[in-house]
Length: 291
Image (tube, rainbow, N blue to C red; front, side, top):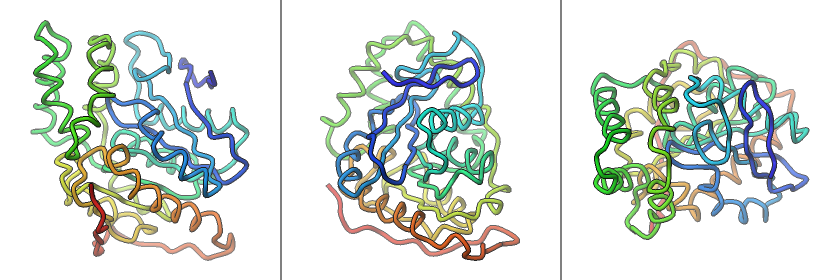
């Protein structure tokens, strides 16, 4: 299996191994890189090399037990994967926490990021209410409480959509997981800082997507994210999708990603960059396709 070394972590990744523009995607919390498999074939058909990465405390990535990390570390992990593959530049993105890492990648190594694909994500820190919820939830997750009610609560919130069959891939993995091992990732999630004020530093094209039923990455958060990015053209809303739109609605997400990669990799390199003095609001659009 392909791995890259990044600091103390051994990072697992999957590449489509196509000689074409690269799209690096990072998954959401409690998921792994296989959440993007429904996108791999349509992206490959358009000549896009999809590279997907397992985050620390998720999937097959290995890191020291209990070692703390931040989303800046996950950004460095993604860059290490690109180094391992010999990829100089890529469009970078992710879902939820994967988007947190993608934004930090664009700030950490702007010369290597051609564009951003931001799916059901945000740029802010946890609100006090969110922090209180997470603390209670992770106390329950790592405690003696039976897992079934927690899984029943988590699946529709984290994945969403209208077909419970799409949850089973993930719920079966949650039942078989080490409930304590997730805590460094939980601390990373809860302790993240807002980077909303730094978004104007990012000048590359950006795609901001959210599911219409996503209660985590709300319309307000998505609009703030798109409004702060000079390269974003509002928010694309997918009707009927929840927090896991890339998993539940790949037939809608894939064409959007293809157009983004084409836009990022065919634009003239000498095109002058636009600048902004402050985040601004822009109108979004709704994709009229839903399951």
